[in-house]
Length: 262
Image 1 (cartoon, rainbow, N blue to C red):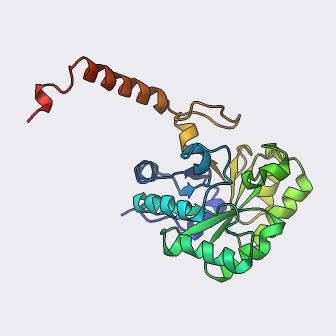
Image 2: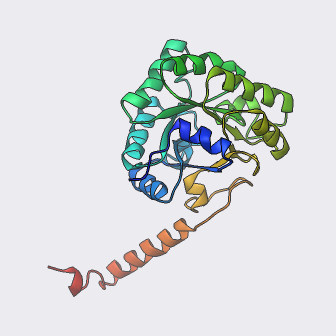
Image 3: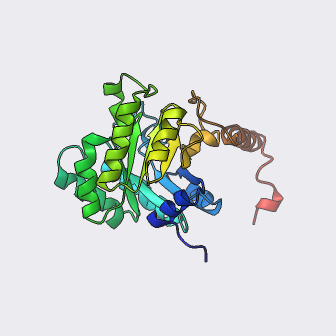
């Protein structure tokens, strides 16, 4: 049986310079596909608010929705580390509420860790969670939950602040940190400075690992794609062709055929 990925596994991968592969997942079928393909981390991102629910941002996603989706992903993961993304207002209000909500991901959904956005401003949350035995992945740079404060989805270029945020979350106990929308030279310097792994998304190849939104990289969306996304398949095109063929055959009564009847 393949050994499950743990927080310690990821630290060893950084030390051994083995690139870490992370991918979002929101349901059982895609979790199974990603897990069987060798993905190390399955992130149940609050990006589901846009990717799955069709919203304009991640801000409307609730804790109960995150628990539901994380539970279905955890059922499909045999090897990968499942990380539940803490939605907006699930950890900002108070320390006790932050720890309680983080604990729900482990207790109710079967996740092995949680992720939350923010740098130095959330180190008390990270420390409280890790003190409670909950592994935390941090997320700095372009943080979608702060899109209104950031003035939109903009590349973050303040090297000194980003370095301070990265070092702060590491000191608070985070086991890894997502670097989003950061110039690759800044991401490279941060990666070299930290003992914990960096997972890049729009942060260049020098991070310890990479993460993409599954629906983006498989070509399931028909909208605008960020510059950092590479499409590895065209599943939307294939799905439209398949469903259109089904519609045509039902209309012309060529399906079901005799071979499909009892």
